[in-house]
Figure 1 (spheres, rainbow, N blue to C red):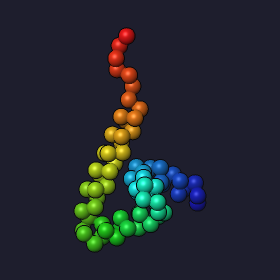
Figure 2 (cartoon, rainbow, N blue to C red; figure 1 turned 90 degrees about the horizontal axis):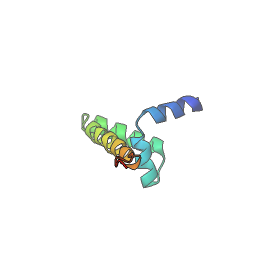
Figure 3 (cartoon, helix red, strand yellow; figure 1 turned 135 degrees about the horizontal axis):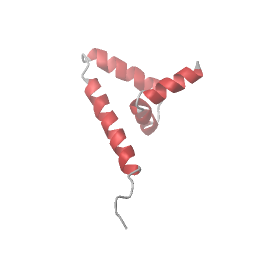
Figure 4 (cartoon, rainbow, N blue to C red; figure 1 turned 90 degrees about the vertical axis):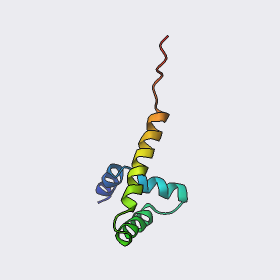
Length: 71
């Protein structure tokens, strides 16, 4: 069961786990709040999640940017 949970957390883009690490609360709590907010506002937090996915991937790309200068 733990292996399945780890697989699910890695494949979910890491937005909720990133926010949980920054805020200092449990990842499951952030996911639960996200689900509640999505239901209560009829899906608008999904846009926030998509922006988070884009931002984290951009951040990862910039951090691992290859050296493009030719010598």
